[in-house]
Image (cartoon, rainbow, N blue to C red):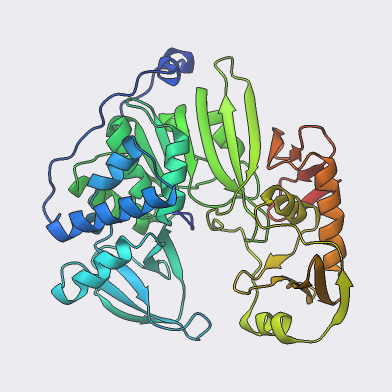
Length: 441
């Protein structure tokens, strides 16, 4: 589950009355997961690589005991991703170039296994190409259009989903099929639907999931409308960022169900995790959690970025410099940064620097802050926006709101959403249009 939207066989028709299907939404004792027979092509090297990956996730705190850990130990990533891209060019080099590695080629095997089990995201599609039947080798230019998410993010969100045997699961944004495979492992594949906008992604996922013994429903379609034909679902998961919660997700969630997705703005720097629950009485409750990592934007959701030229400017250029006794907010105060992103949109953090460095690509404003003594900071700014003043203003309002890391999320049926601190002192509105903002207060 990661960073770009992308995938989905057909289960038996559901009962006509969704209320007849709510029993599975109620808490039940976890059942034993569905174990796979050892699939062809699962080598001892791959088994060892998976065990090492799981051990690193456990050591970092991203993974605990339970069915998700068991799934990651047995799911053969090299069969779900028998081909994957490795970038050979520098980050800012143009045109970029990659090599498509292939597990069937002995010379590629060791590097591919290392890549698949590194914990990093894995690129599986270049420029919307067909995924099945590709010839391995170099590619130049273009961009990666489908990926498998970083494993720490995937493991954390799968655990938060609290998957149980027999649940109906909608996995939106198939990618390499890792999330769908984990859901099949825990819940059984009869109730799993995985949906992607790209037919090449779904074709590959269908074939590769089948190769490891799973037959979920694999559907190609609009990821923002879900797949009502097999709903309602006990769990819904989006593996790409959206600017608002799709109404279809709320409608297709079963009573007692849970949905998770990255909710963000045009900036990739400060993501929020939307957690939507539907009670057995069909009442919907939602919250927005400030998190360190989130998924990449989905199709049609443009994100701001700092170009190489702009990064060079904001890290080296002269500007107006002042000394301040006010400390910049800490990185761990994620609720503040999430509020800044909403109330002062258009800012992007440069995480590749030691000092706090933020740019506004649309107007060319920037800021960098460095500590120069005990409780003293040097602040350099440039451009029409005073980003330092914006940061301090939102930080003061965030402190007055009780320093929340989680906000209540009010979902309007017309697509308008409002995030609010528990005491109501800090609030902002999302509108129904991509990238637009409403009343920021």
